[in-house]
Length: 615
Image 1: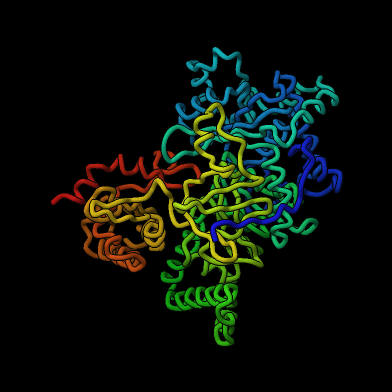
Image 2: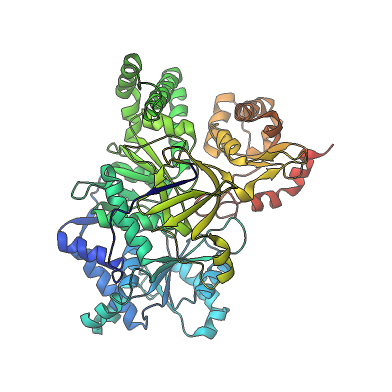
């Protein structure tokens, strides 16, 4: 099959926009709890503070009037630079109520990146999270070309007693009437740009993706009936958002939750997530693959340290076999788990899996994995342990999700079927093409890039994939990541890199070999896993000293050997090197969505790479 589609379930009037979803929600039940906030200085056991739908709408309107009083008119761009928090969501809707366009900026962005986004977007007002970001943006504006485009207002979310803050911004808008607010709110239609989201970009300068009101609203309206088990309207569904709201996936999910009436909470980082899960107790969770890897690795190591490693190993094996049997049955192969396997799964559910589910808050039965590829081992394990992982696929240019697995229709290893109103096509060279309700309107002020990004009305994703006979999409690689060795062998690094990351010790892997005689790899070590390895082996090695330990290198070689089992000899990794430090967003090797910037890593380690091929 080279094309698959899912029929649109819900359409919307052309004159409507994403703010209508909030008005509908308030009209349906003004007392419904849309959000829950952590109190200031939140401590474990302290209840989260509920925010009713009508309260949220009141806060949005007050802030939107402040934006209008500050000179914001329909179509103006308003930038937001903040970590994930409740105020970000209020700002997003306030900007839309003012008829303006939200321009998110990652909180980890450098001054140079901030300037690029502000100048390219032409932002007229900027809201930052705290004093440190306020000073950064002030410095950027002081020497920026933005000054020649007119004054830029600067506001701060936090109130430090001195800086212009959101409370003051709302107060400024007290003179703006309801009629003026409504005129600006209703000025946008489905085709109007709602947000200008800059690609995190593994190469080149970020491009501003113009995401429309129709993209957000139609994706939300159609995702709710597409995933009723997660988002049943009227049910007590809850989720906790920790991914950066500068990423389109997080913001698209926020709009989906609003449309469904799902209660949403915010936590600012992965570090805070595990502590907040127990207090918030979400019913489903949006994750990235690294979360599953860390939870499984941590549980395995904890079991080993407590002397229950063998039992936990049996539990992991049982969960994986159980999930694989379910998966085969959905593909029309086999009858599903047998009686003995069901009994084993039931036993380990009582002994092991229930405790593991507590790490997710105790009430999570579904998680959605996105942003990058999830390993088969993690997907099968968590499903067999009672937490179904629904892997999906999308890009910034598709407003994030364009395919997804559902609880009823799941095939592990695939990224699911097209969302309603979406068509997936596989080009003759294997590239995945997308057309549908989530596909963006084009790149801001970049007609050449926009024209290059489309073919026959389909967006060219740059990813390679295949469709099975039932329309499930499998991503097999990235076109630009294709490695051609000196011997002419084509190697797609993603499967090897995913297999390497299944080792508890390996945090990241970059497979190399372009124009070289064989394939090699650069590895980084997980800091916590290395510390535990040192404790178990009575050593004190750093990652930089890994090559000094024959025992550690042998363990890493074992991980390489296991990864090589999935490819031909010509594609196999012959040599590897361990880098002194792990990749990080702050140091530039990772995008904010935790994707590896391959070109950056390879360029920074060119001498080391040359040494791998020396002689």
